[in-house]
Length: 355
Image (cartoon, rainbow, N blue to C red; front, side, top):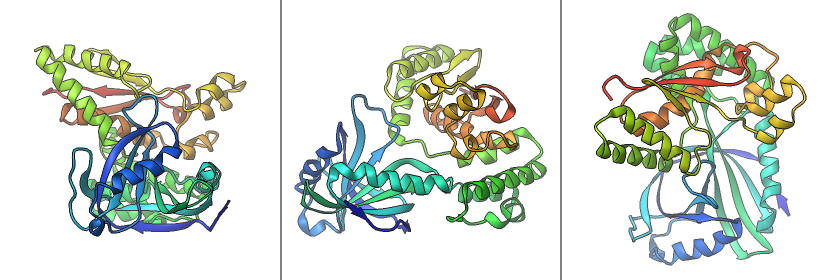
């Protein structure tokens, strides 16, 4: 098994015909690629197959994956649909060797990203360049999809406060710097949050800006959440009963884990630990908090101060879910967070007044 150096790529939007599947092992992908290929006219295929594996999904007993090909024209079948794939920024690594050894290459890719506190956008993409030697030798480009927090923060600050405010908040970090160390990226984020606090003096204003920087929550679970809420609204005229039914749906649906509790018109959500086993086995407060926290930038610097404004990024994770379900804006406040010295991260999600 071998791989080349890790490179940064900017991928343009591409017309792609794909189908969605649930798999239990990566070894299923070559067969699925062949089945998708057979549904597309050969002349319409414009490149090698691409598989997108989702970290968060609405499936149980396996992994959600989209298998598709870039195409020159729309292709629609009962299972196959065509759409423009989004523009992406990725760290790419070419794996050459057994498909079963891909995890080793991913280890190198994730180690590279972790050392720089680069975070993923809840998915990974795999471009299958050569499957002729499967299963012993394949060529697969592994793509770590970068969540460009710097760009999103800049766009959100500019939208709310203007161009000059963007320049002041972002400073030297106006563009994503790939080679910043973990410590350098942390120091930049601390400075950006301190400058933002001066320019946006209200907690509501800071929420509106930073919550727009959250990881992209996958569309499929949100679609299911919206459908569950709409079905509940058909069953009852009581809006709060419908919200309770939505919470009950989340308790029984895959992918949600812990769910919020409702008190009046507020939903309180305490985040579950990132590493539950490590959390339960921890012998010190710092070990517990590091096992609890999802953000690599924070869990590597829990002994250093940072404005809790930054945790509005986590608020944005829940904002996408409930604005998607209700079709209306929601406001979220940070109740507890590790960087405030608390033992957990808890958020208050205020139901829309006109719900």
